[in-house]
Length: 73
Image 1 (tube, one colour):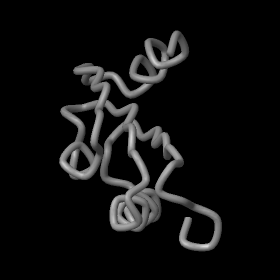
Image 2: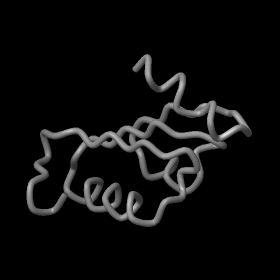
Image 3: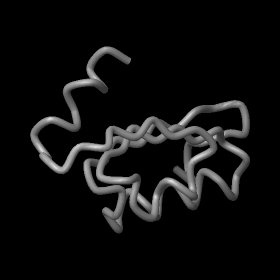
Image 4: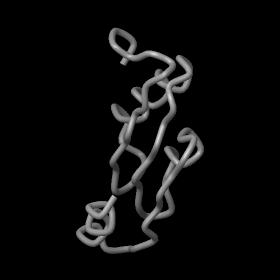
């Protein structure tokens, strides 16, 4: 992210839990650079929900069902 990202870019995060450490590091770096962050998340959004400028959260307790609505996006 730091090597290629620019303020005019968008970062789309996909995470069923919203708590993946490596993904959150990328989102934090993007946010600090002024990159627009969009989270496709599940299970309440996890920690990533507050890091993303825009979050689409699928409130399902079933992990396999979370990515299905995101496919339409």
